[in-house]
Image (cartoon, rainbow, N blue to C red; front, side, top):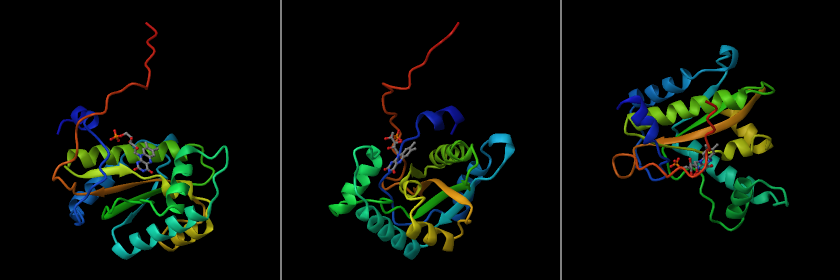
Length: 195
Ligand SMILES: Cc1cc2nc3c(=O)[nH]c(=O)nc-3n(C[C@H](O)[C@H](O)[C@H](O)COP(=O)(O)O)c2cc1C
């Protein structure tokens, strides 16, 4: 698939086959993430690739449990508020049953941590589309980056003590065989030309 087409047809996938993509495909997606640009060429984005089913279900349970313990305040960000409410009412969905979850982390206190990881995540989503894989950014672990239970679990799985969880990506074969590719209409993202 041509690069611009892969960018313009990328959509979030939330229904997957219960089958881990081949190692070759996973490595291609991860390589695309690793080849993203980084501030001052720091190359400090860390990719924790979870394909183990038990690890994923334990993580799902822990995330649900930790969100359900939290309280919504007036200034709670809408995504976090939705996660807390969903967890409390038993409606919480974490990874949509995807067989692979790639967690991104970066050095704590590094000013470009989020920006570098976002470049890596977007590269991986575009690569996934080009390879007929479905993907979706999952931010739940980022919201729980300061949560002791989640941090300890992720440290067991390879997160360094001095790293912050910047985001995550679910990945898999789309339920329908190929990813949804109809772009959503752009009503936001304004453009100002200064000619
Ligand atoms: C920073 C960021 C965080 C996101 N977090 C989540 C998430 O936690 N769960 C989820 O289902 N989708 C998440 N998404 C996916 C968005 O909901 C999705 O990109 C948006 O609705 C546009 O749809 P599209 O990706 O199909 O174009 C996230 C996307 C971004 C860029």
